[in-house]
Image 1 (cartoon, rainbow, N blue to C red):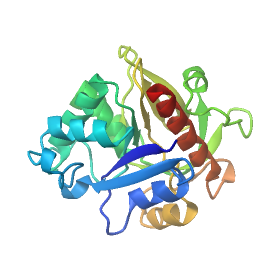
Image 2: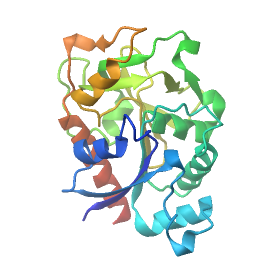
Image 3: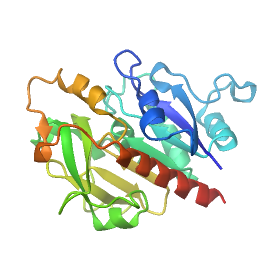
Image 4: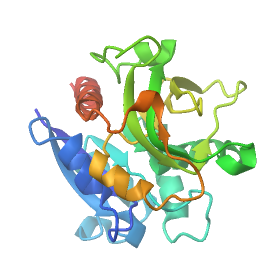
Length: 262
């Protein structure tokens, strides 16, 4: 049985095609069937469906329930705190609707940030510079927390060395915040530079990852060469990601969703 995955693509489709990266490097055809919608251009699931011509969050939710098993919200050059974005209000409302009914969601980078903003408000996301932190661009070492080892998303991933689960590409200037008083979310993975690298919403099949398991070395390096004001991070002198970890994460997510359905 294949996972029917709806990709809500927030990338610009000029310099970056995030949906294609996810299809190539994570959610492969052997275990998933992906359909992407370019939400950054205000194109939504059900736009061409006669039953969803109102294009409301209610009809989008109904369309997703009918045609898909889960959604993935991609990374983006946009800032999730920018209320001028044509899609941001509708996306936040949709996220809240889907979390309420426990429809499976995976958010990556911008996707992870916008989920937290939708659920917990504007003060739950921030620019890293406003926190006294540098933007995090490079190949970073990631370490699973106790909750991360138990959440199922990283099953079968053996740490490559003490304190390092795996290395991945990272490129973000904004971040989601996981405060101690937020008991609805658990931190599942961290890096040396920024502790909030991933989360699971408790009692929901909703995950967010700050790093980019879908980004290969070529795509990452094209992004890094345009970063001139801060040093690129090469943790432990790693200069390319191991792309097998992205496939493992995707398979684990697919298996959890399909087990929930069955």
